[in-house]
Structures are given as structure tokens and as C-alpha cells.
Image (cartoon, rainbow, N blue to C red; front, side):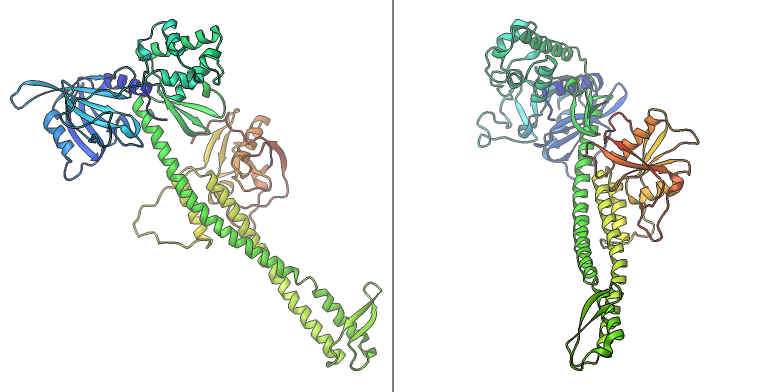
Length: 584
């Protein structure tokens, strides 16, 4: 979600409560479009990060320090000259514009008290950080915008700074009556969600959708389609939101969908108050922004790395599948081996009756009492023909025995790679992917790129996912094959219960009993976890095998995380874990 006017209003309220009145002790410009201000206010140090990055403009308080470049850029040197050591007099936001004005007092070269403004514009590709005097005359900006780039507004030293025209949009915060709002919305013919976002400054389409949702209105309708009651309901919601913003009644939060951040906001989203969505409250706007974009960055990085790993694994799986098909074909070709054995035995028994130079011998097959014709090489004796057939039989027999073992090994490799693909899909951290890569390297599916250097710090292994059932039982979930192995054979006790999706790659799920009897609800929840953490996650229902841990056996030479068992129960589970809270 982009920074809309409501988000900016929440940040301004936070900055007023923290850095307003504080002194600027240091200014650095870590990136060409980014500033970091070190501020001391009420004896508390703060770091204010502001970025005019076209793809991700933002401003928030952070606790992450950044290195200053060896040579400070000109804009940074200018700010140091004028406002380093100055005091932030006020932090304001005109209307619900996507910009923040820091008014800073300082003393000039003559010791006279002067005022400057640092303006942060959070407007997508038009984002900028502009430095002006008290009369809005531009001294400089982090991005200079000449007339050749924008004919609407030049951002150059000596030009006057002004707020870009908002195409007739109104200030929601100035509205105090239903009639005022109705007169604004009544002049539009667009669908109501778009009408709200286009009629008022700083209202993002997503929050316009929220307001329409709260009013209980069909978003496809226009203002003219609404009943008088629906019009009044929408205007009441708009006035309620305007009052909350004016009063600073903000509640920073992140909206998650299946534990993945999808939105953030300073006012509640009621349209996300249902599964599969959940809300994570944040202590401050800065925490909200940092956590949201931090999680997004991690997910993006994980997806990129998992895509690379998935490609490697899929390639290996394709190779194994081709190998399996070839071995199956070779094994099928050995099915006629018994025919050669029988021919040899028939020749040994009835060969005396064959005429010299005959090309075949017809006799009674004493295995099934049917007549059989055995082909002969006229240049060989019947004894030599028999030996030739026995030789073919023995060769095919050896091939079949070899193929049986190879097919079993190849099938195990295929099953392992399929389970690795599922583990990649379920991976949430770089540590998860690293352990998966290690397994691929250990079993020769990919080459080991480099050995770990002596003395290098080893990354800590991630722990299994931990849940608590509604009845208070701890439920552990393995993240990959190595962890499944450890969970089932080292962590779980004999009296613990083991769950797994039937005939499908997936995680081992363990219910820790501590000697207690497990109620049905916990069995159902463990089954839901086994269904969710499997390749059948998208299925409406998944069959789950479960048994006591003591019934599990590890096959000699078996792959990690693969078990055998002969005593088990089954249940059908929905892959829905929204009611369960993960501990870690």
C-alpha cells in the first residue's frame, strides 16, 4: 500500500509527539534520494529516515543507523550548513496532502534567528525532499525538476514552492456536515468507491473501499444509485473518519493474509475482519512501516531464492523421472525371460525328437499341458540351442534383479525430490532454504559450491514450528526433510502422536502428550496442520494418517524424513489453520 494522506496524518501525529521541539544534531545522505536526521528531543535521541525513492517513498522514525558516504553530496552539505544544530519548531501536513513540512529555526552567519522548511513529498514518482526559506522560496532539493521534465511545477533553486493542483479534490478534514459531503459526491457519476477517492485529498482507493464497506453499500453503485439512507450512511462514515484523523485516534496495524502482510493502515480495516485475514497491531507508525516493508522485503528475497532453488530441484526431478521411465522400459523388456527358460527346458526334454536342420520343435509344455513351438537355429544342435536360451534367460534375470533395485532407488529419489519441492513451497526463512539446499547437496542432486571456511560462524538451525492446540497441547511441525527426521526420531517421545498427509509430501506433525490423553479436538487441529503443511494444501479435504510415535520405523538406508509404519488410524482434515496461533 502506498503512503496515502491518512497514513501521513498518523506519522505527523507521531512526529509531533516525539521530535517536535527537538534539535538536529547530525544529517547524512546515505543514498542519492534519502536523508537520515539525528534528532535529540526531550533528552531522547531519534533517527528520522526520509526517502524520495520513486518506487518506495517513505518517512518514519527508525532505530537503524546507516553509514554516511565518504564524501557528502552537495544537498547534504547545504542542509548541514543551514539547519544542523537547528530546532524543529513544527511538523505539519496541509489538509491530507501526501507531504510533511518540518519548520526549522536556526541562527544564520550573523547570529540572527531564521526559519527554514524541509518539505518531504510522498507522491510516487514525483516524490522529493525540498529545502525552502520561510517564504517558500526553494533553496535546493534532493531532486531538481526543470521545465523540460515538468511543465506544471519546476523544482529549482529560486523558484517558489507550492502544492501541486489536486484537480478539484476537496479537504475532507474541513467538512463538518452531511450536506457538504453530499454536495461534493453528488457532482460525480463514477462508481462510489472511485468517487470517494477522486473527490477528497489523500484518500487512497483501498481506504475509499473500506469506507464504502463500512457504510454497507454496493461498491458498483454511483452516488445517484444510492438511496437517501445509503447516502446518509456513507457521509456519516466519512465524517467519523475525519473526526478520528483530526483527534489523532490512530491505531497503526498490519493486515496479514495467511501470515503474509498485504496492507497497513493508521485506521482500522473492518473489511479484513474475517478469515483468512488477521491484524497485527503496532506500537507506532514507524514500527508499522518498518515491519511491513521489512516483511515484504524478506518475502520478496525468499521468493527469489526459492524460485532459484525450485528450478534446480525441478530440473533434478525431471532428470530422475526420465531415468525412472528408462529403467521401467528396461525392466519390461525382461518380462519374456521365463519364455527362454521354458524353451531351454523343452529342448533338454524333447530335443532328441527334433530332426537335423529343423527350424522349430513342437512339443507338449508340461507346465500347462499346452502345445508349444520352440524356434531353432538350424546351424546349431538342440543342445546348443537350449544353452543359447538359458544364456538369454540368465542375462535377462540378472538385468531384472538389477533393475528392481535401481527402480526402487530411483523411486526413492523421486519421492525425496517431490518432498523437497513441497518444503520449498512452505519455506519462510533463508535458513529454511539453506537447509533444503544442504539436503540437495548431501544427496548429490546439486553440486556443493564451496566448503565452509574453517572458523566460519555456523548459522543456527531453525526450530520446528510450534503451535498450541485449543486444549493446551504443544504441536510441532517440521519445516523440511532433515527437520522431519529430527522431530520424529529425536524430539518426539514414544507416547507422542505423529500425523502426516496420506500419500503426499509434507511435514511431520507431532502432538506432545506428556502422558496425557489427547482429546478429539486436538487430533482434528493436528490433522489440519498436517494438511496445511503438505502438497495438498489447496485441496478441500485431505486424508491424514496418524499413529503413536513408537510405531514409526526408519527403513535401512532410507532418505531423511521418510518412515514406515504398519499400525495407524486415518481422519479427514480441512487444510485450515486460521484458528491456530503459531508460537514461533
